[in-house]
Amino acid sequence: MGLKALVIDDDTVTLDLLSFQLKDEGFETATAVSGVKGLDHIKTDEFDVILTDLNLPDINGIDLIKQTKLISPDTEIIIITGYDRAEKAIEATRVGAFGYRVKPLNLEDLMLDVRNAVESKRQAVINRKQAAEIKELRTKLTSRNSYEGIIGGSRAMQNIYEIIENVAESDANILILGESGTGKEVIANAIHYKSHRSDEAFVKVNCSALPKELIESQLFGHVKGAFTGANADKIGFIGQSNRGSLMLDEIGEMPIDLQPKLLRVLQEKVYYRVGSDRPQDADFRLIAATNRDPFEAIQEGNLREDLYYRINTIEIRIPPLRERTEDIPMLAEHFLRIYSEKYRRPDAEFSQSAYDQMLHYSWRGNVRELQNAVERAVLLSKSGRITALDIPGGIGAEAEEAMIGGQTYPATNGNGTAHFSRAQLGPEDLMREAGAAIVESLPDPEDGKSNDDIFEGIEREVVTAALKRTKGNKQAAANLLGLYRPRLYGMIKRHGLEV
Image 1 (tube, one colour):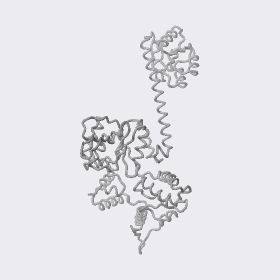
Image 2 (cartoon, one colour):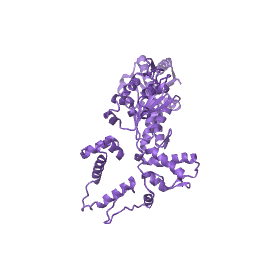
Image 3 (cartoon, helix red, strand yellow):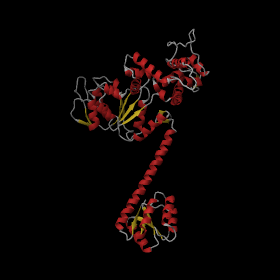
Image 4 (cartoon, helix red, strand yellow):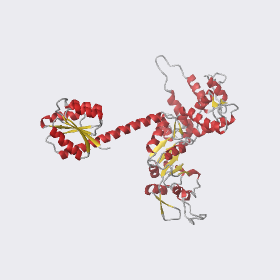
């Protein structure tokens, strides 16, 4: 579409001069000899730029600018004025005019202002459109319970959806962090299939599953005769992912002496097959993943720090399922639909007690454990209604029935003090009983006072017990308590514990 300009001036000589000049610049030009006629044009057509005199016979120039901005807020206005009206022109810029020029006019300078005004309007339209798209996207994302095969409507998952939406089209390296079973591969799939590489190969490699002595040739490929057993050329995973994406799962398990070679590939975009000095183009998008804290892996010498910063252009941290319990019912329903169809159990459904059981279990195996539990429940259900899930170490049927009734019945010894059998109680039951015992043992606060904060003490004793059980191994203690290691470090430091 061509550019449009409007000239408003009661001086016909100025009107003709500016109209001729704008047409010479490629504008389709309209003219008006009064403010009212100018506003009529503005109401019926859209202009990129308006040139107007402030001293019009019928409308105050400042009012004209204000009305124009109400009708067409993106259209830029340039004021044409005499020497004695310069102060008024400055006032006009405060209410929305793009700028002003004083008569007699330098047409070259004026046309420069016109071009700048047109560019300003173009950018304003782009910015407004982008803002509307972002608002629409965020509204869409916050209403989603699923996204590109990922299930979850929690705020944490909405944030992940937004990150994927923003970075998928780029070639930025991605590092996905999350406990085992949280769905790192599902996130990686979404990134690849939302990218411009989606029509090409997506090669997935589990670094911990490859034999240490073969991982280099598996990754880079080799030529015939490169080593004993190399009876033919092998393209390697990097070659297979050319123009596509490469996922390196459990990147922290890659041999430390191989990591500089991968770093060089990412920096130089070329690689060499084992036994060859011929460079190969490395055109792939890297998605790395790990269930370990990368800084711990660096500290222990299992991950090079320079490689970490190279692969971590964008970091996506997937929260464990116990931190997004609101997603458990929709995940369970999703898996129920899959397995009821697979095993021909069309009447399968969860009872409220089954939901209660799911919501009160810690899901150390995360989404994968939930999926397996739902599959077992569908297979083992004698009728369509699933009243309980067979969760190893989870809430037992008796505890479940107690929860349904809204009560718990702590076991007590002869003097009424609660006691616990670890063989009989699951983790959630044990914590419920321990909480009840602690609260029952608290003295009643004195009038007008309150007891000391008990949670600091509980946290300190739990961390101390975990460190004792793991003989001071902080990673093992963090795993035991379901914490990321940096969070455990903070607790140790806050409570002044000695490991």
